[in-house]
Length: 362
Image (tube, rainbow, N blue to C red; front, side):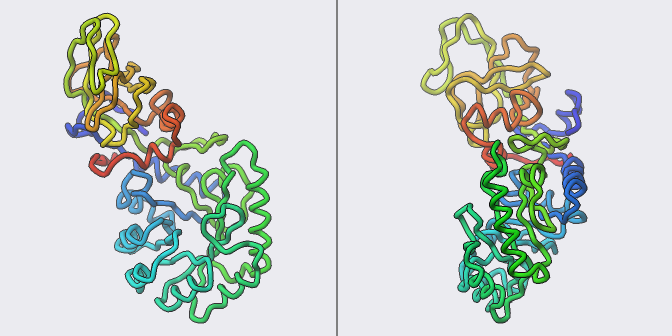
C-alpha cells in the first residue's frame, strides 16, 4: 500500500473518525502474482465482505482477472451475481436458499445425493465437495461409488470438484500432502474431463504445495497477508486508521478508562483515538497492543472501549486530528502481529473490522 504524507492521508480519510483504507491496485497485483506463480485459474474467496475490504469494490477490481468468486452464504452469492459475475457457494444451501439462487448462474457445493438432487431440481450448477480429511463438508473420499452417483445425478450440471486442506499453513505439511494424494486419486478415478474447475489450494497451499487442480482458491494471500511459513512478495491492501479525537494529561497516580485498569506512573500525555472494539480493534486489557502515529509507536493503555481507545503519546509528536495506524502496515500493527498478541489469527483480525467503519478506496 502506498504511503501518504500526513496531509495527503488526512485528505484521503476524509475526516472520518476511523476508516479502512483499501488499495485496489495492490489487490490486483496480488492476484496477478498468484496466477503467474501457479499458472492456474483464480477463484477469489470474497466471503465475509471480502475479508472486510468490501465485497463490491473487491469483485469490481478483480472482475477481469477472476472467472469465479467463492463465498460462504447465499446472500453473498446473490450480491456477486447482481454484478453479473459468477459465484460459488462453498457452504451447504437449504431448499429455501436453492430457490432464491435459482436462475442466477450461481453454483453450489454438493456433498451427497440429496444435495445433488436439490441442485438439479433448481437448475443450479454444482461443484462436488470432497472430504479428504478436514471433516467439515464434503463426500468421503473413500466412497468413490457415492461420488460417481452424485456426478451422475439426473439433470445436474457439474462444473467443478474440490477439497480443502487443514494443515497447509502448519510447519509440517505431511497431512496436507496426504490429502492432496487422496484428492488426486478421486479426480483420476471419477474423471477429470467432467470438471471445468478442479481446485484444492487455498492461500497456503497455492504458495507452498504442488496442489492438484487447474484453479487456486486464495483468500488471505490475495489480500496481502502471508499465511504462516509463507514469504511471498505480496502487496499490502488494507490499513485501519483512527483519528486522534483529543489529547490530555494524565497525572501521576491517576487512572483511565473502564475498571481503572491503567494507572499512570509519572505524568503521561494520552490521546483518545476513534476506534474501539465496535470497529474491530481487538478488546485486550493486557496493554500489549500499539498504534503508529506520525511514525511513533505508541502503546494502547487501559481497556479498549466500544468506540475509542487510549494511547500513551508522551514521547510522540501528536496533535488532535492526526491519524493513528491501528491495523496493517509492518511491525507491531500488522495483522499478523496483532493476531499473535491477541491469540487470534490474521483472518479474525481482518474480518473483525465492522460494517460501520467506512471503506476508503485508493
